[in-house]
Length: 482
Image (tube, rainbow, N blue to C red; front, side, top):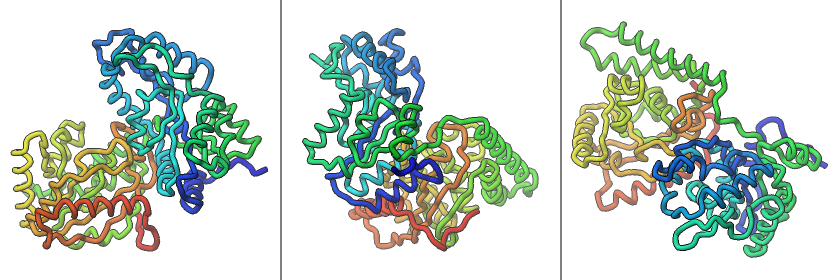
């Protein structure tokens, strides 16, 4: 009997094992949802539109608390039989969007890596959960999971009847569904994987050749230890005193460095003050917040200049990362709503950022014209072609503005690929997670031969380049740390 793996970095070890192991759709990976893929969240009263009334306080959230006990099952049964009965399915659309936003903010990055590793190997990835499709289908789509085994409330004439089609997907019943799914899809359970955090899923875990306890409760921990199953533990997304303290220290360092730059800069030379601000303030804030930056191909940030630097937008921490990387002589492009960010909005405004209001085509065109002028005058531009912060690590589609800009100004595009900024500061979070952020700077891309008719293809090729870089992260001797 092997010993349960609990030391080192077992998530990275498991990902490496998956990526070097057998491939093909006959191998499956069954993932439990709450507590395994996402950290448990607390019900909130505004999950549903107000017009559904105060009694609709928690109609979507039970089942996402991370608990796997009988009380959890009874709560879900009461939820469907009493709270949902007679309600139109369409009334839940707004609630689903709000719930998805919360779930995405509680997604474990480690679970994301595991799912991506299985998908990379062509495995059949299945979400198995006692939660309902109403709760899970948006996040399943975001994760790229096509198969969902979940509790199915009965719908008649567009309304929930309060009944369940079959049973709550739970315990032995979940295991039965997994076994039937394996037969229907010609899966080899002996070479397949299963992940869960609760003792109720022990029957499902026993079906596969590679059962894994993720953030296990006491019952599953005992079972995994006795049987030699792999144990993986994800970092909690909820901040503790240490993280809060480091964040405050980083904020004070940012303000202190910015104040020192302002006080020591010559009067009337704002551009020199801005470049000094970008050179010193982000570095002080990142270091004091406990963030280490590891850069591959850092020399490509210096030449060529001017250029359009594009980056994948994982986190609001990018507002510090990009100035930290480029150091000066560039114009950041940010959304108009960034003006409202506390402290950062003021610093972005002083730093000469160009705020784009994409809701008005005229405003976007005017911004583009001013950026072309800046590039022709020798100043580079930094812009996120995704347009907004990703809700998960998934790479969003690229908008065309940055690429139109480069072709009009006749300058190259320099792709900056950021791997894990979202783990350092998750979307909508204000507390930093100390650690290392990995960045790779790719070769400059010549845009002199680009034509409007082929621009879509060029953008698609760069998008694929980002995806391939994130999937096969480069390393080696060109990496430097700051």
